[in-house]
Image (cartoon, rainbow, N blue to C red; front, side, top):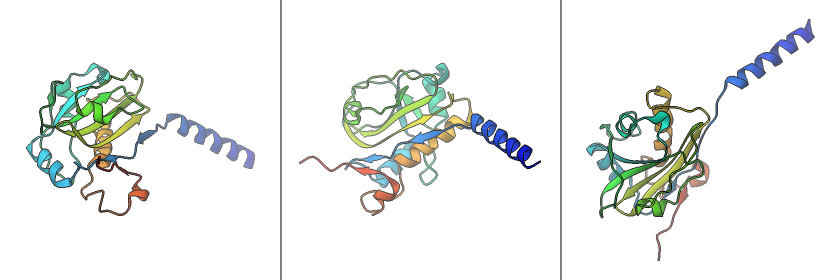
Length: 189
């Protein structure tokens, strides 16, 4: 009887693991331009996203923007999609590069040079928050399922990515960067 119990328990564990999925959000990188107040005013005005790479499920940019939301500690205004182009000085935007599992060059992305990724079998996105051509924060998300904007899990996954990128306290003053794994990028001399 004990062997049967052990065999059944092992079979249940294997089947539960087979149905499980994994999600990884990289530690955020914070640049000197990031402040919670700056992002808060951007969030209140309706965040703008610039979308690159293969769209999840072939969704259009407006559907992707509609599925996004700022972290709960910031004002909640609808996101809107903006076409890619030369970034004017001071224009704030979040760059989402879908299909990019390994990250992107944040400085180049904020300057308007984004190399689209090619991963389409799962949700993979590198994100950067830019103020004009200056990076403010960046992180990436890889989810083992191919989530699309019409799935509530897509919005939840993106909310976890944004929670990492947009803390409600200044990351330079928290004193817990080792614990939260974020990386502070020093200003250039």
